[in-house]
Image (cartoon, rainbow, N blue to C red; front, side, top):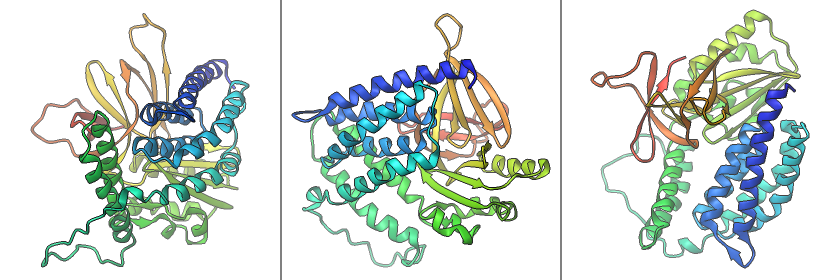
Length: 377
């Protein structure tokens, strides 16, 4: 590992340890502060993602969401998970990063346990009131559509939780309501989406519950032929982002370029692995995980499928640090004034009647209604 890269990872690992310590204090038995714990958990998740611990980052992000919503069952999982995270951070500082399969083997059972426990938190839904739709408005999608069923089951619970939160009169209400509505937006994406396994039916078992927009699936169609060369294909979806590993193949230069072009078309990137390639791209081009940043006074954002890393600079350098982004195979480094925490945003085409810099692919809208330009690479 290069010295500057190791120094950067050590710095991020130190920040992650501080967030882990804060999370530990916040969820100690007898002194539980779930809202403060949620803030520490989100910071920890962002740091783990930069460190390459994607599985841990996704799990901690789920924990942060449940802490924000005040779900008590998440505490047992969080407290049991902390020693594993501490061990992983110590390995990072020694220059060792666990492979994705090793991460999944250790953290997979914790993720499953979290889902089971959260699904049992039904006390807040005991006063559920049915909402009957008006007659004469047939659904656009068939009730047999998987996305329709998913949104119906999850949407009813989220809306009911939002109604319950709305009755409270305290400073946490706005944060909790925003988290609920954001999650409802994420689930709404499932309407009309198609399983990624349609492209790789022989690997369907290794990419369960990975869904993408139908338009995006069309753009990914060139992957069928290239993917057929892989010994195995694995995929999972986290934070509206798909991570797909092709193992057991070595593409020619022309094939690698073709793969890069396909990823660029879907706001993603590809990188080489020891035994193959990793493809990272959003599950939708209309809503995706974005990292906002400021550059020369302008608001910009880059999708999780193109974000690589952020290297902070020392004070007095004239800018906050270097943001590395990648579209397909093309990597670009930007001097930025400030980087904000990642969040899920809606994406729109750039309106024709507003002034805008050159080379934009669209605009992203955050939870507060602020507009961020999306660079076209």
